[in-house]
Amino acid sequence: MAGGGKGSGRPAKKKGPSKGTGGHRRRGLEGKGATPPAHMRHWYKERQQRAESATRSDKPDKPVRQTRTKRDDAPEVVAGRNPVVEALRAHVPASALYVAHRIDNDDRVRESIKMAADRGIALLEVTKPQLDRLTEGAVHQGLALQVPPYEYAHPDDLVERAREAAELPLIVALDGVTDPRNLGAIARSATAFGAHGLLVPSRRSAGVTASAWKTSAGTLAHLPVARAANLTNTLREYRDQGLFVIGLDGDAPLDLADVELLSEPLVIVVGSEGKGLSRLVRESCDQTARIPMTTAAESLNAGVAAGIALYETSRHRR
Image (cartoon, rainbow, N blue to C red; front, side):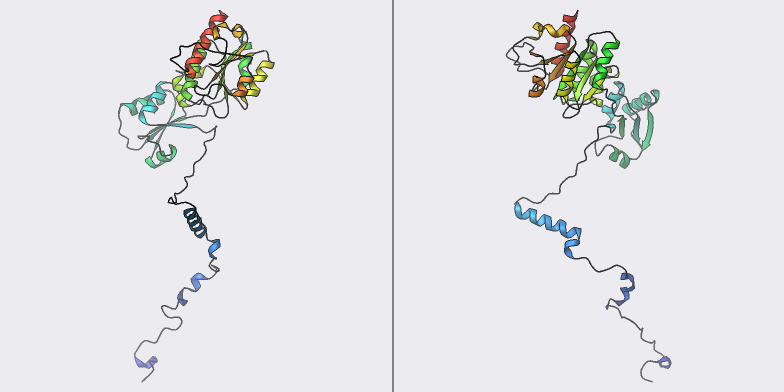
């Protein structure tokens, strides 16, 4: 019997859309809406921007790397076995020691773990990917140390510290000093010669980092560092409180040893090795003075210059 009906012995044809018509996916597409036009697709925009960039330049288009700005109040992470063990030996304050799973246990790792345990620093075992994210891709060798953010003092606290000790105020201000090792070295000299604190600008200046802690040989634990939103204004406020401001300047006409103000309440301003004092800071000084040198040396390192100035001040005050 023709037609393939129930009695034909052959299976009946499947009703509905056949393969290849697209009808079998219609239910799955319900509620999806229409395909967005090209100008609404993000990949289309990116492709269009790359094409326009290639038209403007003969150079191949390169992806733009996104960089995150680190917050001032964010903890610092010291990565690597040598940096970590050196930081712990220098008694850099730390909140946690991160150790990777199945790390090769050499002498540096054992010493770091022992020092951290003796000082009550938290020991945390993490995976290598977790450590990679924590150190932002730095070479960590399975070891990282978290240093909490430094708590800066207020500029007025430095003057108050001198008054509480019944001493003439002596403050060292840094102008454009961006190397934290210089800050640490200046802190060491400031402690040795009786200064009451350091003053640093909040922008474009070195801060108290693990590197500064190590260079200071622990003196930053006893010497406060204040931050100024505007260094020029803070120096003027110090002058209003009765302090004199002396700036170190290689082009000054007066030698440091001949400055009579060294025996007065004093702020010594140290500039960067290359640029020296900025114009506004120089104008805020009561006097500028130079450290006499031979012509073979153009300038001194900021840490060395600060140490000489502090020694000369201490000698005058004796």
